[in-house]
Amino acid sequence: MKRNIYNPYLPSYEYVPDGEPHVFGDRIYIYGSHDRFGGKVYCENDYVCWSAPIFDLSDWKYEGIIYKKIQDPENRNGKHQMYAPDVVYGIDGRYYLYYGLDFMNRIAVAVCDSPAGKYEFYGEVRYKDGTAYGKRKKEKFRFDPGVLADEDGRIWLYTGFCPQRKYMQLGLGLIGVHCDAVGNQVVELEQDMVTVKSEPRTLIPGASASRGTGFEGHEFYEASSIRKFNGKYYFIYSSVLSHELVYAVSDFPDKDFVFGGILHSNANIGFNGETEALYYWGNNHGSVEKIDGKYYVFGHRQTNQNEQCRQGIAEQIRMGRDGRFEMAEMTSAGLNGGILPEHGSFEAGIACVLYGKKGACKTVMPKRERILHPYITQQGADREDSPGQYITNISDGTVIGYKYFYIAEKRKILSLVVSKAGKQEVHGKFIVSIKRTFSDILAEIVVEAVNKERTAVIRIDLPEGKHPLYFKYIGSGRTNLWEFSLEAEKEGERYGYKESIIENDN
Image (tube, rainbow, N blue to C red; front, side, top):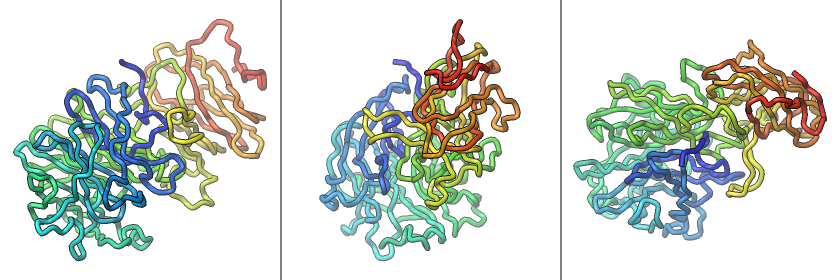
């Protein structure tokens, strides 16, 4: 069933970050952490799985809860959260789910006979003497497992967390575990999928060990993920910059990796040389998968002005003949072939460009600064009957962008659904352009005295071809943008606010 799909690619009430995409049979499965809207810590919910046919990436199916945190014998009270997992198809024909419980410094494993069935606790990764992997004296933090079952039958496990010193001074990584910035580590596992066969060895350098390696500026931070394409090993990870996913390449699964480049940024920093954040950014975690002959990068974005409400995003990514990936842009269209439909209604929350008068910044910010910045949020809990996402706290200078539309018929009817945010009266307008500089304004939509949800309707002439669409608010007060729509002009269409609040016959 082909239909339109946008970023985030799962329903807007779903919060599955740290996505690990895997093709099993003729379906693509997404495994990841599971945040809770309004949550106060990372990964509050149990693991769920979503899947889609490899021939139709718009038809995502909810597979349900596949593993509960209370199933782990060390977490019967559910006190600990399950962080980013990975799943691998074992040599015995079963599926193995590897995960960590927040800062317990251990890697546990669950097993299932099908990719999205009910997983059962299997054991924890351990050394041959029975010591849990991570429990040796001053052993490095075992975090964010990535797993590879190679074609030769060998099993490889990758883990690591390399916070820079300034983060450690803030307490991140000092919770009873040993962290440094040397790099991540790899071990080989026995055929039982849990026993460590080889001693840990450093794979990708961290910030304190990168001089002269070629990884400078993009050293390992977290989010280990491993793939094998065309006989080459691709190690995908989050760099010390946090907002970006990068990759390294080798002929071997456990050594000789060289830096490959940037895959994706959830602030679009680095794309086409961009140096400023175009979206409120935070940590990133994901991977690349080849689906029906094409490559796709999966990552996540931040919402709700914190890092505990993350959502999966995905883009097609191009691999050159030399085996190198080109950086993918974060767009609103994502898996929709890179293009938004010319006509239709769109949730405001699919914005891929969002920043205030002072620009975009890291999502985690002092409370006193939050009033200065717009953000994507929703009403109610994260469940199927929740209303769609909208943008709130829009104030003077806020820029909102959507990429990309392909316009064949230039004359359109543009509608915005807006409402007041906060107590201050709203007196302003949205200006519309296909240029982020707003050097060419195509329309102005007056927004005044809006006390509850209203729809503004204007006529707009859009240039033909592929373009983004930008809105900028100019004025006083704060507004919400709920949705917008583009439709073909209809004869006799009346413009202005519905319910005749304001006439705006542009």
